[in-house]
Length: 68
Image (cartoon, rainbow, N blue to C red; front, top):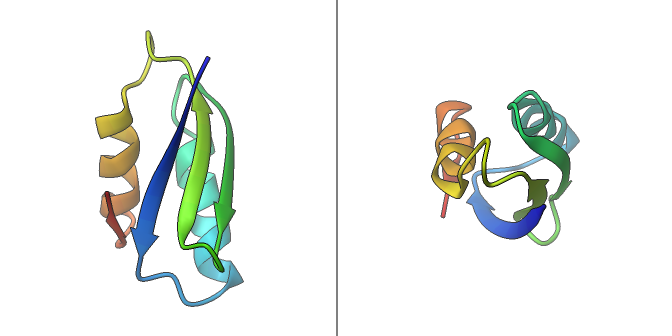
């Protein structure tokens, strides 16, 4: 398992947090995702052989948020 922190812009409420958490955990290879509104970031544990960091960022961006 690898861990990464992805900075997220555009979150304004706990609904945004739930949305991003759901999008990330739905991806194959993601073991866990902790999204923090206060820190404006997601901490994700994932299997790099199944899913890459770029796919995590793309999933967040597809949900309507800016991620890096």
